[in-house]
Length: 152
Image 1 (tube, rainbow, N blue to C red):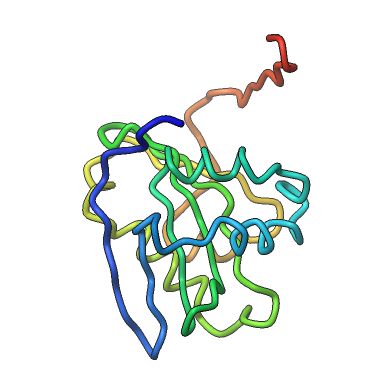
Image 2: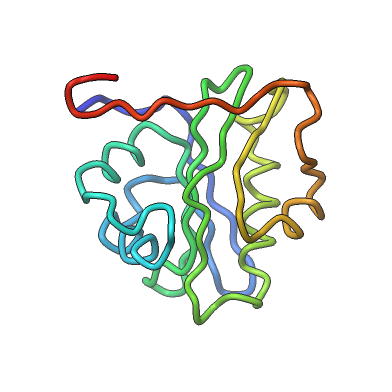
């Protein structure tokens, strides 16, 4: 396994909840359980998520010992960041956790001064617009390649 991204852990508290980027405090199995209910990562293998957490700025929101929200930022810590796997436990949605999580992601000291922060959403556009995100107008076209196990 790779040593992971060299960011500095951040811990915040609000209303009895803890928001942390300390990967040691983010339980991979609990994060995987949250992602199982999503349309984008429901079938992600555990080892893939563990590697992704190690190589991303990863955020977890804890209530007592329970992970109630999770997100990752894929970044070079200098110019670009891509938000992914942003999820809040179904029974905690509407309680402000998502707002706190995303505001904390934007405010993270290691993610300041970037040229661009990007994300894709199918169902949370209003939340991200409240934070200042807009539909891209750069004239660029979103493109992707989905390589198989042996390459493109």
